[in-house]
Length: 151
Image 1 (cartoon, rainbow, N blue to C red):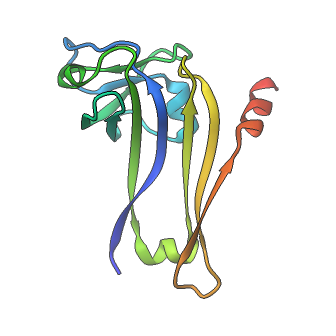
Image 2 (cartoon, rainbow, N blue to C red; image 1 turned 180 degrees about the vertical axis):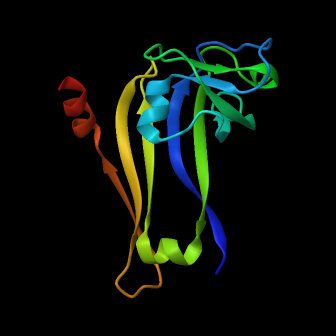
Image 3 (tube, helix red, strand yellow; image 1 turned 90 degrees about the vertical axis):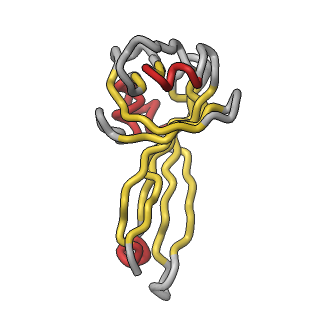
């Protein structure tokens, strides 16, 4: 059946806090956001700018923890400006048959205007009993995230 590329992490509607053309490539992202969805430093991401439609790929570097930083660097800084809303996707290559048999999980953060977590979604592909397809499930886990951050 082959290999397919599935989203494993998404930062939805994060706001650009700075655009730094003088830095050599990448996008700087608050490590809290990276950790919650499972994006690693140096991981390639695809980015969509909701304000102007620009799409680009780059790699991630962690910024300062808790600052809500979203800063396209280098050439990517020419495609964004502070205040723009972005969607940032990370993918992984998966064996199609294994996904059909075992499923797949993606983590999604929906950000507020300060790049804090407004909602946290778990999106899953769940194998069907017939073993030939999967069902898509989308569950908000924001209450779980809020509870764990208070303890």
